[in-house]
Amino acid sequence: MSRGLSMFGAALCLATGPASGGVPVPPQERSSTQWLEAIQAAAQRTSYSGTIVYQQRDEVRSSRVFHSFDGRLSSERVQMLDGPPREVIRHGDRVECLYPQLHRIVIEKAGRKAAFPALGEGGPLGVLEHYSLRPTDVERVAGLECQVLRLEPKDALRYGYRLCIDPSSGLMMKVQVLGVDDGVIEQVAFSDVRIGDPITAGQLRASFSTIGWDVVRRESHEIEFISYGWRVTAPDGFRRLTEVERHLGIETQRAALQAVYSDGLATVSVFIEPGAASADAEGPASKGPITAVVRRVGDARVTVIGEVPQATARFFADSVQFVSGH
Image (cartoon, rainbow, N blue to C red):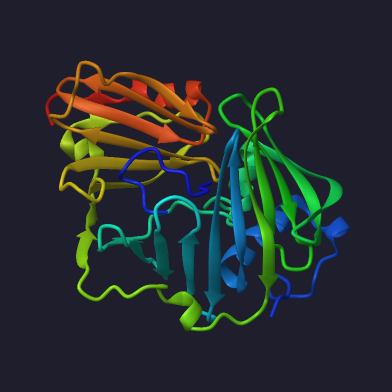
C-alpha cells in the first residue's frame, strides 16, 4: 500500500452506494472478504473530494484530492499543499506529474502501487492469507462515523494496520500503520471529505498554465530479470507483480531494472543499477514504515524499498544474485 511517500526517485510522483453495486450490506454483517472488496471498489469507483493529511512523527503534510469515476475509468487530481508546489493528474493508467518551479511535466504509466484511500492491489483472499481482519469500535473521522477494522499480520514480515471505513460507501477515511509494539508509525486521513458529489472537468485540470513547459516521458518496458542475469527470491507471501526497465528521477536519464512485489497490501520494489555500485552506498535506512536497504552485488547497486520491516527488506536485498551464464 502506497500513501504518497517516496524515498527513491523512480517512484511515481505521487452518488454513493454499495461498492459492489448490489444491496448494501449492514456493517455488522460484512465478512472480512466483503470489507476488503468494499474498500477496494470504493477507492476506484466512488467520486469524492477532500483534504488528506499525512502524519509521521513531527512531520505533517497535506494534499487536496479530486477523484472521479465515469463508469469505465477513474481520474483524479492531487494538489500538494505543503512544500514546493506540485500536482499529479491521473486518467486511467496515464500519470502526469507537474513541477511548476521547473516548468516541467513528467508523464509516466501508472504503476501497480495503490495510494490512499486504496488498500493494496491484491484480492481479498490473498490478503487474508497473511493478515486477519476484525471489526472493533466506531469513531468519527472528518465528521463521519466510521467502522474501525484491524488488519493484523500473521507473521513478523509485515506491519499491522488500523483502518477507519465509511460503512455506507466503503471509502477508507483513515489508515494507521502499526509497528511491532502496536504503536502508530504513520497515519493518513481525510480531514474533510465529500463523498458522491459530481466532480467537474475543471476540478481535474491543472490549477496553473503549462504552456511552454518541458515534457519528459518516462518510458518503461517489461523484461525478465533472469534474461539480464539477475535472480531475486521473495520471502513467503510476496509475489512478483512486474519486472521492468525504467528511467529514474526527473533530472536524469539513468536507467535501472525494477521488480515489484506485493503480499496484497505491502509493496516492495527491487532496483538494480548495473555499473552504479559505490563503496559508501551500502546500509539500511528507515523513515516511518518505509525501509530502504542498499547493497553492492558486483559492479551493481541494489536498492530495496518498501513498506515493510527492516528484516523483510534485508531478506529481499540479500537474495539478489547475479547468475553466471546469462
